[in-house]
Length: 209
Image 1 (tube, rainbow, N blue to C red):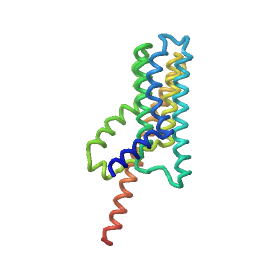
Image 2: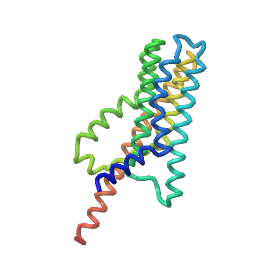
Image 3: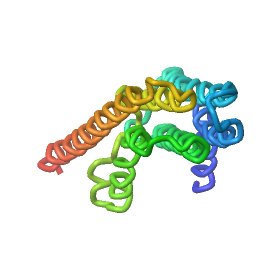
Image 4: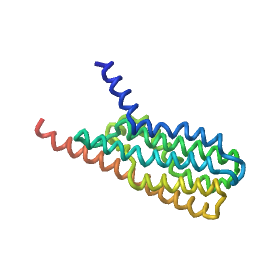
């Protein structure tokens, strides 16, 4: 039984949508290799960035398509793809920004604005992970929201401006900051709503027990 469960989880991890998500990790390494010290000759950095953005769009689309074909829905409490996709997003963005910091030395304030969502989300995720009572109550929905995807797109645009040393960098950094905070508020709101729904369902079942 355990072996079957392990094999099922492994096969799920190797599904096409999840492989697309995982591909962003080596793409982050490729970005390190091709990023030059100046905006000139940045074509290959843009290629790796564009491919990563494409995988981010396709993995969610293919996951929903597979779920529809199977006659079901995406798992509401965080199937493999639901938690894998945002982790791969963060690893890729982290690798890209680390490469830019090392090679280009951009203003720290702009980097902080672009990374605000991750910097705030990390301690929240640690608390969620290591407080069992909170985790059991919330059963958090890891699926990316529209705001979350929009924040990721804004990060990509800000990173593109960083690569080019473009004047729009400050604008895109502020947009990434605003959308990142909005996405975090939405995640927390969604988590609390799920927790409240679970409590109400438990109360409704109580008298019948």
